[in-house]
Length: 312
Ligand SMILES: Nc1nc2c(ncn2[C@@H]2O[C@H](COP(=O)(O)OP(=O)(O)OP(=O)(O)O)[C@@H](O)[C@H]2O)c(=O)[nH]1
Ligand SMILES: [Zn+2]
Image 1 (cartoon, protein in one colour):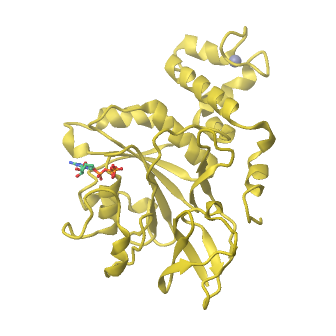
Image 2: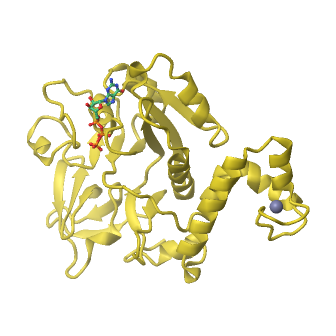
Image 3: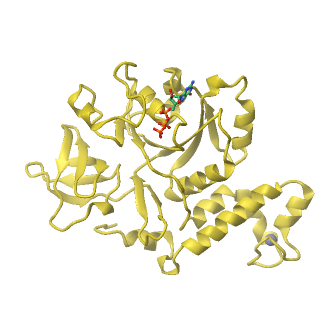
């Protein structure tokens, strides 16, 4: 029986199947940290024993400080909704971290600017984030309005999975409620949708995997306070494509674009086509990535084969 992992606890997994919520049984001694919300597993129908995890299309993961193994955030996510609000300071450096994470995972990032109803004109916010990555989709909305579900429809629907990330208070829970199209009296004010929902008539059964009214699923990713980057060189290359493309024109192939003569990237800064602050943020992320990425980890493919119980 195919089951999608809905929540991962220290000692147990719960899932969602066509028959509803299922509590899963892991092989003796198997740990849950090799599973991510959004994973698909094959389960023995009678015993609920997990037989096998199916290979992932995408995997959002991060390295926690001091942790050797990456922490799995969510699997099989098509679109990452990076949520930030119009009424708070925009932290572009933080948004770039999320973008690099989404790129590296193979998910499509979309920036959601919530609380657009609380400002006279959301256009300046939109303009500021649109330049952060080529062809980046940016949406301004009121997370509490039913219209938000329509605005987000291009990324939702049967077969589609979205995940939401962003700081506390930006409107992730509000968005989840709107996407689930819950009546206001049933909706959770904050803190996501509780497990007790399983008793209700909604198909939503866990804190982390929520059914969207128009089809598809939304994954809530609470608890990312500081997003440290590691193993994201490909994600950075895509995020900073304008720098990636200039680099081959530098005189030295290992140019760090800081002090070297004949640097095409610094020339772009001098010419005014590349903002100095952007180059500075690239440098910071790249250095952090280099110092956090263990050398033996190797390429992305090598890394994923180290995850427990996986089979490609
Ligand atoms: N006017 C308006 N209020 C919003 C919007 N989005 C969220 N809010 C309000 O902002 C507050 C925080 O929203 P939440 O949905 O709880 O934010 P969150 O991101 O889930 O926060 P955490 O649960 O702490 O992670 C609530 O009072 C919401 O009603 C919006 O687009 N417009
Ligand atoms: Zn250079």
